[in-house]
Length: 291
Ligand code: PAF
Image (cartoon, rainbow, N blue to C red):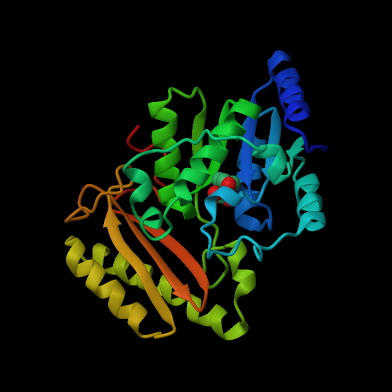
């Protein structure tokens, strides 16, 4: 695996790959890699000739009171994991390399960026779309891989790609869960043993909603009430949102008959947890089902 820290070097390496007619896949990450990230790498490895990954804890997507400083950084372990998955190119720039002094250009997907996580984390999606647009431009892959865990992020990135006619296919991979159902997240390293158990209530709430849908309940209001009732059983978990929305527009839907994204975010102490399921559709990801 070749590791690059400068934009110019990464751009040159990717240009070389494209010139050779190779299919280039990109897996953007913030490091602290877990099995969820590695599933994206494997999907890329399975369908691309050359796999590029990025590790960059993007300051632009963290709010002033968020966890940028303490976000887990596990460089050696990450490099070993990516080597083991046969990643070819790793781009790991410094914040100054990505945002040189004087850079004043941002990419904003208006509207969508203020929904779900964007509502509680103002500026978050502006940071995500700006860095992802830059990574797309540096690497220019044929396909880029993202996790369904960040379903709102997927919707925002897809809209950016559509609106700006970016010639990159977005492939969404299913959520990877621990054996007990907890959706994998780099932020779980913040949780103590007790909190780790409490965090499971989000998955229980989603499973309960799924159960109700399977029994014929289609009304979002009822389903949300049920889910919130489950989460209330663990008072330490404070709901940020539990919404049932269209996976593309992120607008609330009143019933799930045409398929819907059930998305939840909550705080456990200072740790923010998110999870989601797709109901009323065959697929567990908001992938290419309606494209
Ligand atoms: O999903 C993430 O890890 C980040 O939001 C991303 C896409 C790598 C952009 O920093």
